[in-house]
Image 1 (cartoon, rainbow, N blue to C red):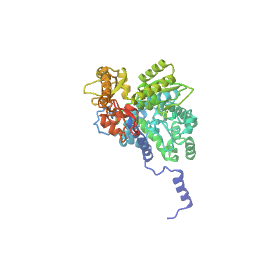
Image 2: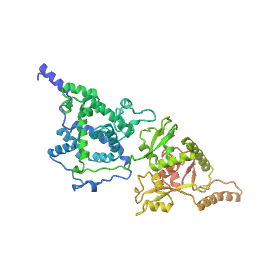
Image 3: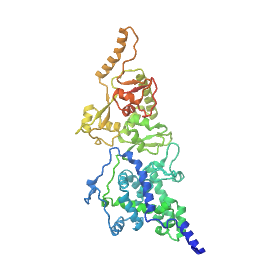
Image 4: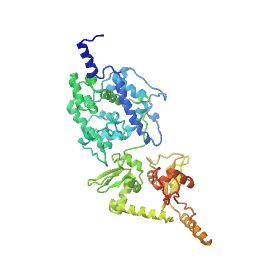
Length: 502
């Protein structure tokens, strides 16, 4: 078959200048949503108490559990007009393909996004309202990161808003060896709002601003020039494949989040909230691990509340650093600092106490009156937090902090709760008595003590010991052993090391 010169030019134009021609209607949209699905998968660890679908509240249409509703095109078009967005919401086959992806093929992703909205959208909405941006732009965070503040792209874009380092710094985000504010939901949202306003001022059109957020203003400007139009749908075929699917994916996500009940979709909640208090730290480097020890706040929760601390350390700074903490933990820290006058004095005192505690353990010392021990309580059927606290003489807020709970109502039958209670006088007397017996027996035989007596509170590591063998010997789990000694599961043990076992 022969081609004329003119025909060859047309073929070249189609292949190289119009790269999206010839694709399926939703192929590029599916690629964007598939990437979102992979990012959302990394948030599973936050589902601490398992998935729960709030169907009783949202299932107002009485759908069957597995029913997947489908509607006529006119219904979708009418609903999109009812969204009353400032951003133009045009309905077409590509947008329909995006809606079908969220409401049919990626239903679990949509449920996850609905749940995560409860955590992150209040932050984004507050920032965007203050900056004067259309509220619906908040759904861009769904497309960028699947609402995962720790998302990292292959191009090293980071956070809810997927900033690369240079753009993040341009918009005021701190990025260094200790802090990466791209991971901070509030600060990164402020930067995203400023960037989106600049893009809108460049193009005067929100769809073009959204497209340029994905691919950069240079590529969008080139597409506008090639198409001879500022209409996104007319320049779409001149854009990179991901950007061509990015705007329809945004519109499909906005529709799905608005009309999820109409598609029998409900939030998959996460037991995590950004509701918090703040503890101000100035001129003091301190680790989150140390803050957790002092305040009783779960270390994992502190890391989730402060994702920008990439090393788990608040670095030395002359400016006040506002550390997010649970309210009860922040109050406890403030109280401790008042007692010691400064945070530095509190940390030094804690260091002295730890050294003294270590010395007592190594010397196989007995507990003094007032010292506390960790005990584990299994919640019985019908037992609530109040009954547990009355049984052990502890406070509900302490139990919440010790166990990383969301609130005092998040307990269930069979759950193991870690509690700290004082040694009784009888227990101290018994330990003293047992520690004295081996020495007396040895003297009675006229020989030195062999040290065969096993201290019920501590275990001195012998050659060949592992965390598993020690846990089995003392009737505890490896997790309990690690928690008691504040060590990781892969901790290397050495002969002579003393571990707490009670």
